[in-house]
Length: 462
Image (cartoon, rainbow, N blue to C red; front, side):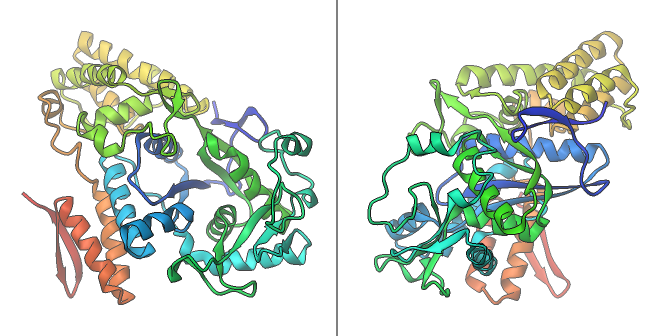
């Protein structure tokens, strides 16, 4: 059975084949980085961590791009409140994010572009849209996208222009030609700090949120790529507007598959910072080990709503212990997965049907039951190998069952390497303040750096 993925654009589950044989290009909208990440953010990043792991398990090369929005109204407001530069705030929050999601075993993407590094590309794209008559400069100084001039608007969300018009808010003194139009370039305000604006032919200002992703995904993956992902809340207006910008400029489909994960809910409300009903990843990890949290997130299907509660996490911990108990009783042999094995074949069939983790996890429990009956080291090895496809069951069983999995709460080696590389790049650019900031962040995570003429090595503090 070949891989099938639910495509939000077509609203059906379709057979997936990459545009370039053997190579998948995937873009996922990442964090707007002004505060600590909460468990809802972790759910999004975990969903696409599992996606890219399974694609790789199928022998595909994956170029995974997950952006960082490091300029917007909330970031500016928080930097002003804290009396610091925007760059200092976003550097701090990026470091915190990488530590927190690294603790959950979420692998770094291939590329993690920051919006502020792509402003020239954004301005170039805005210029292309203006030349095509799809963008205009308003009397306010903003540059807006003319929604009604793009024929395909609404195809992702299924919203017609008439439906959108019925729910619109009347634009007052903003210079829009139509209330549905959205901003591409925001004119600078005198009240904003100097580091919140860039020069342009339209006057000083900063990019709108939607144009950031169109420019970054186009620059890193090309005009058309395989998968565009993000949380379900981004389907409209963010992803709808991305399509309008990118396809309006280039006349090509932006992505073949659109993939959206469901929300984490608390008391039947979407977990969000705006509602104030959220738990940060750090708060959750203070009560539960990292693999339990990962298991809680992974065992639910990525498109389903996920209810957060201590009861559900307690159940996840008890369930995970049952799997580790089987591995402790029968030490695993090292095995290569034989996908013809009945357990492996069922696991693969589940994952190939739109990343069906609930059914795949059920296979793991069936395997554990068989291990308890047969005491087969080969089956223990298979259990561990299939668990690895989900980022699970890679700790020492005895340590996990004693409640002190030695590496569960630590930043991963891959995340450390990413931060070390970022520090090296900062030093090369003579941004010594940023390099020092990264060294301190690594030290806080228990990582000691050793610089030498040959490069930088690191060790975990004892």
